[in-house]
Image (cartoon, rainbow, N blue to C red; front, side):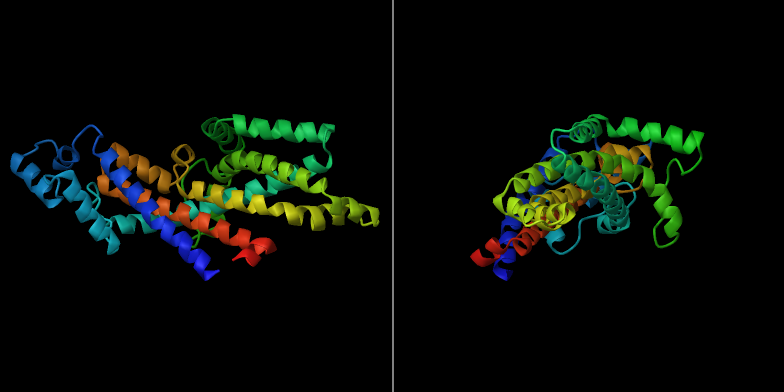
Amino acid sequence: MYRFIAKRLLVAIPTLLIISIFVFSLQKLLPGDPVLAMAGEERDPQVLEFLREKYRLNDPVPYQYVHWLGSALQGDLGISLRTNQPVLELVAEKLPVTIQLAIMSMIFAFVIGVPMGILAAVKKNTIIDYLANLIALTGLSIPNFWLGIMLILLVSVNLGWLPASGYEPFFSNPIRSIETMLMPSFVLGNALAATLMRHTRSAMLSVLSADYIRTARAKGLPESSVVLEHSFRNAVLPIVTLTALLFGELLAGAVLTEQIFTIPGFGKLIVDAVFNRDYAVVQGVVICTAIGFILMNLVADVLYVLLNPRMRASL
C-alpha cells in the first residue's frame, strides 16, 4: 500500500509543475498592469519603478517563474499585490470556508442522490424510475446562479427563514454558520445529487443483474438485505471514486455560488484576484486547489483499493 501511495505522489509532482507553468504563463497575458492599480491616482514614475523592482516585475518571465517556484518550494507563495498580505495566510483564511461548504454540499448530494439512485435501480422502468430520472435531469439543467437567486427570494426575502448572504465562522457560532451555509450548500449539492443519482442507478443495475443476487433472492433473503447488504456494498466502488472527485471540484471553489451568497471562500478569492491582477494570489490559490484535487484523487484510489479485495491482492 505504501508503495502504491508513493507512486501516486510521484506522478503528482510533474502534474503540479505543469499546472504552475501553465497558470504562471497565462496570467501574464491578462490585460492591464497591477502596478498601476497599486500606485494610486498620481502614479509617480519613481513609485511605479520601485514597485516593479520590489515584485520583480521587470525581470523576464522565466526568471520570475523560477524565483516564485523556489520560494513556493520553501512554503512562501508570495505577497498579495493588493493587500500586502502573505498568500499562504490568505489561503489558510479562506480554506476552512471552502471545506465547510464542500462538506455540507456533499451531505446534501448523498442524502438526495444515493437513495434516489438505489430506488430508481430497484424500481427500474416504473413511474418511480422515470420520476427519479426527471428530477436528476432537472437538477443538472437548472443553473446554480438562478436557483441561488430564487432561494434567496423565497427563503430569505419572503419567508425570512435563513440569512440571504454572509458567512459566520463555524467555531465562533456553529448554529449561525450552518444557517448561512444551508442555501449555498443545497444549491451545489442539488447539482451533485443528480450526478450521484445517475451513477448510483447505473452501478446498482449492473450489480442487481448478477448471478449471486439472484441466488440471494432464491434463498429467501429479505429484499432490503439483498439491496443494501449485497447489491449496494458491491456497487459502492464507483460511487466512492466519483464522490472523491466531486469533492475535489468543490475545493476548487464554486465561483458563482460564492459570489451570489457573498461567501469568502476560494471561488470569491480567485475572482477578486483575477480582476485586481493580483498574480501571486491567483498562483497560490490555483496551486493549492490543484494539490487538494490531487489529494482527493489519491484518497479515491486508496479507498478503491481498500474496498476491492482483488486490487489489494494485486499490490
